[in-house]
Image (cartoon, rainbow, N blue to C red):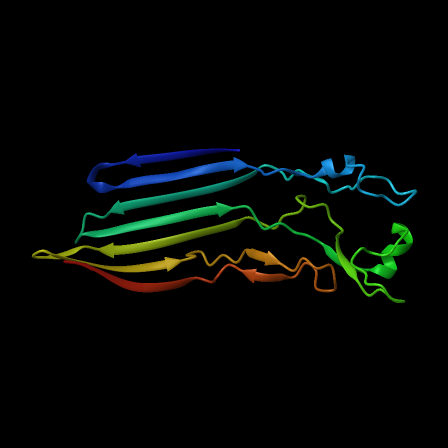
Length: 199
């Protein structure tokens, strides 16, 4: 991947900075398939379809603008970010009774006994292939600088998620009747008020 960052300063203390990052992280553990010390049941191939995960290139974008207004020492600033959506998985809990006929043996996590109740999570969708919608967020802050002798007072009003966007941050990744229900969404628009005093 690569990153591009830009900073620009303007008269009266205004500035803009931001950047774009494009990249991906590839994971490959297919080397295990060539390790002949790992036993494979007769008739089963020494292969797995998900040993080489190649997600698509994804883009992060962030920008910040600060602009002092010409009245009463008021300064306005905004921050915007656009992030890739969360990865979607479909993992199914599969019991030993379902796996053993194809595997040719019980799961290694089975304990000695007449019945094995062990299970494993199996990916039904290749990792790195499904993603949710992008996460876009815009925040706004207005502040004023008040000087009294050697003391500086800066009251601020901040509004987060100004556009009240509601992208999904996390999904239910278990493959069941609730798949792929959202479990977390971006916090709704809210505001806070603060004061910074320097003396």
